[in-house]
Image 1 (cartoon, rainbow, N blue to C red):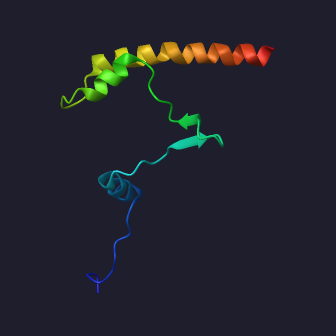
Image 2 (cartoon, rainbow, N blue to C red; image 1 turned 90 degrees about the horizontal axis):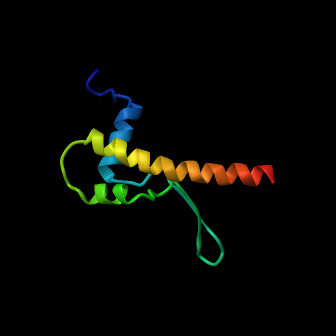
Amino acid sequence: SNAKMKKKTTKTQEAKKILKKKFKVNTKIVFTEDGELVQQWPPVQKSSLGKADEEDDASGINLDKAKEILREEDKFDKEEYRKKVKEKHR
């Protein structure tokens, strides 16, 4: 009777199945009626280092390169935050 019982799938097993199928999950894209992009989540990387890293096919994660990319992206994020705060104060 134990062999006939089905095991309950865990959340990690379901997540692995989705990753194997290469679905794009947790993304949101909003367009206007004209078809122009209004908002995209998660935001696209703006730095040139992030784009160059995608093209590099080295195995594993290079921590130094990842830190540098995050620093570059942080500059853009800080600028957008400043603009948002200025608009809020107006």
